[in-house]
Length: 128
Image (cartoon, rainbow, N blue to C red):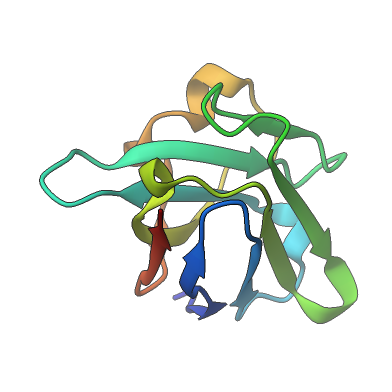
């Protein structure tokens, strides 16, 4: 069983930045792809981005491309989501997730059912 522990998030003004951390209780982070999803109030959960286990390739949703960056520190079993130029539309509960498929294409990682483990979710609120 893999546990994902998130930290970060909170309240920020539009145009500001936040960073999430997600620590995975795994032996080797490179055996998992790590994704981020978000769910706004009254909305369906949507894909934000992913970093593959093998190679560390990143994929992003069009809505966050150029503003959000996913990175990882394998030695610390930690994945980061850096969010810049935040907009009120980014307000949501953000969750990290781990997929046991370490290397696939973006269409695979867009689907939340391809992730095996989930973090608890953390609220981000962007005020205008």
